[in-house]
Image (cartoon, rainbow, N blue to C red; front, side, top):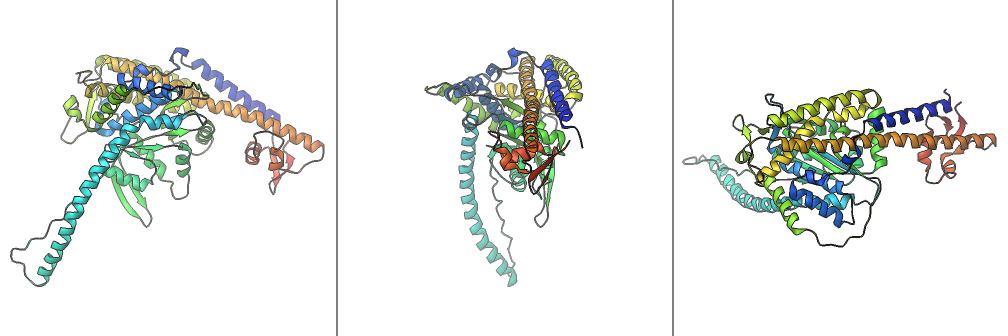
Length: 490
């Protein structure tokens, strides 16, 4: 038993205090918009063109989508060492989400920015089909030869006999998958150790699959995939086991604010705070449309440059562009130079001071920012390597120019993280307000001897509320029997 008014007041005060604390630490207004000029030149211009051409859709959606494409195109092909002496290596494997209500062009924008990867996948599939036709032809010959071989063995005719060689089945190069079980993804990864991009039109569905019975180990698989440099064993009853040499997966999709709030709530109050939600670091949040009718031809020149860059990132050998490799078949990498490292060091120290401040009032935000050291390094590498393969720089280490731009991008994504977890606080305040209205109505009904009442009947007094909403909001505040409310807890 507890006093409901006191409980509601305490929850409202906690939500307000967390929001005010966050507002005091918020990054200045000038950094709130995504600065497309921080991206590689042609990428930023094309992202701006795509967003404006879609009736002034959010520029941030196009820019974040482009960064995800660049990240996935590099994958595990080359890493970065932000420290001068330490061997800590970051694989620029980033996860992202576009967060907005329906009809703000989330899906059309990311589909447009993903087109270079889609075309590359189609081209590789055509090559694969040609190889498979050749493989099948050779396999038919092999099957005839192996029959003859076995027949001669059975007759003891072994003079000059050698066993036919079976051709190895060709691997299929993949860049994108849209939906698959972890087992299938694991098989694809074994043929594609440089990594793949998992694109999901609705991320809430992805998170829902992780809670299904029998899929409990899937979370650890994806957590490993974020790092991009580790192996993973998959064991399934009646399906056998296999080992993936390198799990490297970038995850990107869209989600609505209400859905992300439920996931954050589960991470804060449930048993799912394993850092999975915090790995979505490239996020862009838009809560309203800025629609403007636009009818213009796309910038074909910038689109061509963007497509060319993605192709180069997919097929370039980093060693030909100044990357280091400590031993044969070892990971390739670039290092920060002294000036870039100095910027990174100062920024990292300030970041950890802010994380310390958040630990008490907003621990999930502190945990989210705890992954920003690798985000900084990844962004600097993406910006540098994109320029390197396009001939915009001839340097063999990452300079302060790229570290400075990475720092500004991290500022933007930190602000987005603050907005993300503030959405949850605002939602909690809204829920407290709705709950108070429901309880007041129940008190009125109780005074008029109109209890018990079903959740469905109660929801009819409130526009926009469903029976399920009422049940969730009143959980712990009323007593029910057979889904009928008959008492308010005092």
